[in-house]
Amino acid sequence: MKVLVIGPGGREHAIVRSLLADPNVSEVHAAPGNAGIGKLVPTHAIDANDPGAVAALAKRLTVDLVVVGPEAPLAAGVSDAVRAAGIPVFGPSQAAAQLEASKAFAKEIMAEAGVPTAMARVASNAEEAADALDVFGAPYVVKDDGLAAGKGVVVTKNRDEALAHAQHCFDAGGTVVIEEFLDGPEVSVFVLSDGRNTVALSPAQDFKRIFDNDEGPNTGGMGAYTPLEWAPEGLVQEVIDRVAQPTVNQMAHRGTPFVGVLFVGLALTSRGTRVIEFNVRFGDPETQAVLARLKTPLGGLLMAAAKGELDKAEPLRWSKETAVAVVIAAENYPGTPRTGDRIRGLKKAESLEGVHIIHAGTSFDDEGRVVSAGGRVLAVVALGTDLVEARERAYDGVELVQLDGGQFRTDIGRKAARGEIKVLGHKAAATKAKA
Ligand code: AMP
Ligand code: GLY
Image 1 (cartoon, rainbow, N blue to C red):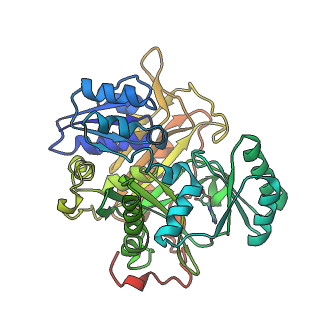
Image 2: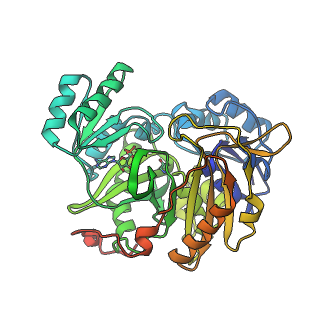
């Protein structure tokens, strides 16, 4: 099987790495890729958000499957163009990608499908925003309705700050979704769908804020670990039964079947499981950790989803080890990142037991050396027999990587390793099945 992977980031590097480990995958290409991907497979410098360009490349390479990584090409209709060219594609249509591209649409589908989520109101001017804030009270949650790379959400106890963010979105011609605050730990569950059937991957936890102890602004994600020893029994089955399958059914019912990965962002609140958000693609950096543990060959699995044959796929097999991914970001991220800095120590870090490096914002300079080229630069991923060992290995790797101005969190997986995560009054046992 020949596969083309679309996207430039760490998630795509992790996908390429796993595809190369699938004995039935004979060739992998990537577009546009990054320096780490370029070391593994041929890369093609096309505009990944241009449906025509991606479909033309897929045809020229005569690939059997296209895997679309990020949300932007999905929202732009890349999957539709590839599918129209007769090539199987893992990634939802433009219509189905609205589950991520519009938070208001996602709320509508959740309401229709009876999916538990935060109460919310859509506001399109200052007066509506103020009303909605006062209905739900503090802490306030204000979300830009459109795609914002995880940075369009403000959670604050300060009403003026909440109003200012809403106004900022209105000034840009947008609308906002204002919702009730959800307490409790957050979990990411990736659910593969072929339009009808669903298969969940092992849950992971992401670290969204830039600084330790969840301080500072939101980012795309600064680290992740999996599996979650502390997650309530039956959580995965609950996500399938109450969230993913009803959503997939509803999308099919509307005539816009969802093919790809439904990323369910959950809060395990004191009142039960609630969906915080849907994304229509793998999470980054959760994927770096999740795929490190997946033993089932990835190419076959994604092809089964693309072809509507997930019901025939074998049950997933997982490594017993724990995986931790620690992101190293450039100076000033999540603002405008400093780029063009040399990155040293990658080989040394990779020589550590259980450790590998996944590139995100990297490229080659004129002399062919790896330099920073984006906000999140790379992730150090480590497997260990448990979370304590995986963390130690990951952070030993981080210490060896040198990047001027590089920032990373020192607390990825720390609370869980110390047994400090509490799920209050949670009854995932509603469906009685095991995670
Ligand atoms: P989103 O882009 O919807 O994933 O939001 C980004 C982050 O904002 C989430 O991962 C949460 O940490 C936080 N957040 C979003 N919605 C809520 C909510 N209703 N209550 C509490 N925190 C939230
Ligand atoms: N790590 C969260 C995301 O990919 O949106």
